[in-house]
Length: 395
Image (cartoon, rainbow, N blue to C red; front, side):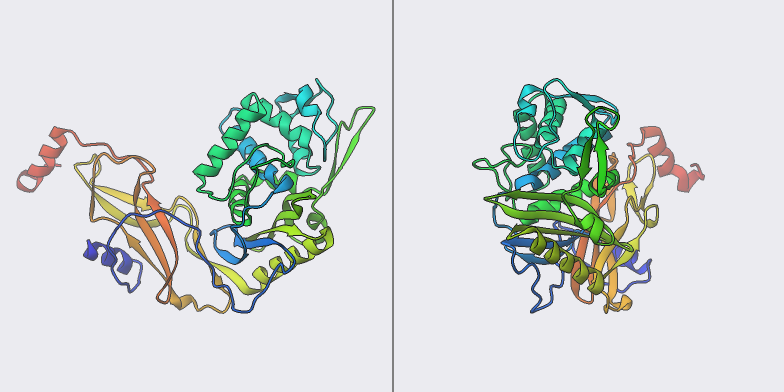
């Protein structure tokens, strides 16, 4: 197997040290946080993450369990976008407001019992105006009741491996045992950003609801960074007297996308200033290094007793790592760790091994390598022909 690893690595022009294949579960890599760097000094908890690679650049009390206020709605929007992707929901579907949804206090778009809006309009109300009523209406549309939807939220948190999060409602209104952390919110935010169309809502500064009615409702985004910080296009603000001022923000600069989360800030001005400085730091200090682009051939693996003798490994995503801008490209190398041979049948998406990326001797990131296609088991006649092909030149 060590020869296989070496051969795969050398086929890409790399020198490498062979590693045994021990299986793999991906974790967000830690970044090279510079000694003495202090960001978000006034926040109770904070994190700065690269959206593409999940690399944590800076963190402060990032696993503290704190009230997330309306940042809770990031999970509500994520489940909404997933329902749309799965065909369970359409942007044009009408959402009816129950008496319970209309009774929500705090931030709202003043839905009346029985009032209907499209999913598209409800998303505007949630993303821009932080509508507690719109959040509950969407939850009831998707799951039947808010309670059932909250169970979906907690199930999703568990699926994402979040250990600091427990939801009690879908909008973040104060409730006992409702908490999250800066780290977990960043992970949920990163997952939401995989649905690229969400920034159409979170990145808009102003819009209207009920535009053609007698009572048009002007929406102004509660996240002022989308107007005042170049490249900012989300994601969600939050405030309660207990949680103080919170924000999960994202901004794009070139091929970099940052996620900055702050919890427990003293006021909006400080919150926005500190998040802006977090963005400035990342964009000034870091860049991405791409290893493979989608569709690139990464290597091959032999398939024992398969319909095909060999499986070509193609990149199903962009494989890239975050590096300091002063890093030397020559120091970045990668290594594929795969078994010499796999046994048929092979399922599409089956984990076959991993791609390890190094900077010098330090592991920067590990990626799961999954089969891009299924390979069925060969029948006895095909196997017989293969066995006899050397003698009779049959294939």
